[in-house]
Amino acid sequence: MKRSIPELQGSEQPLVMVTAYDYPGGKHAQAADVDVILVGDSLGNVVLGYDSTAPVTLGDMIHHARAVRRGAPDTFMVVDLPFGTYHTGTQDAMRNAVKVIQETGADAVKMEGATTEILQVVDTLTRNGIPVMGHVGLMPQTATAQGGLRVQGKDDDTARRTLEGAVALERAGAFAVVLEAIPARLARLISERLAVPTIGIGAGVNCDGQVLVTHDLLGMYEGEDKKIAKRYAEIGKLSREAIAAYAAEVRARQFPAKENSFVMKDDVLDKLY
Ligand code: KIV
Image (cartoon, rainbow, N blue to C red):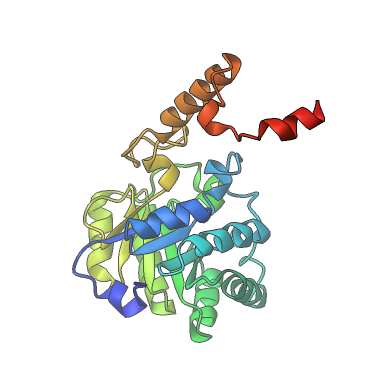
């Protein structure tokens, strides 16, 4: 049963969010009864093989989110607006967010940052009925400007900016805020200050929810941040072993076996001979 925003905001238990990028990913996440599915632009790294999220396009996000929605019609689904699709003005952001909502069936969009321009976008979208999830701390889309993929909020300046950014996102109308790669004590302070839920990744246990990239938790992506992610399965290893076993059986003419083959009557075959 799909959770509503008030249900997500009022949850007594920590919220569970995972990423999904395709039909089976959506189906498994929904069957596992997560609260929120995020079609993250981590798509770029874990599915499309880029070394950052910057090349991911709006078309990529829509294509994948539609498949996720087919697998998970009854789960609250958030879709990342990718880099460049909300940075060129409020009108462009509005047009792109409407396209995502209309073409994917998403319940909300997510965007990174809390600059004056982005707060303006959040304000406009939410006033026009598009729920927005914010994202502060480490922001992969603009990581180069943050000095690389590194923990934020350890020093006075980035700690203050992260706290103020989260508070400003709530004021602008965000219904929840992702806190990525910040010290646990800062995440706790932010979570205490905000009325809307915080959803942490590499932000300690005192957030109102947690998110992980599914390919990281399933062991399907070699490049995960080992500090942030925990592997709950070794699907990558299992996949390699299964494909190697299939290859060995093909080469040994053991597959397909009799039970995998179709039969035909002798007289039909005889006529062909
Ligand atoms: O793109 C993504 O998967 C994300 C999560 C890491 C929060 O933004």
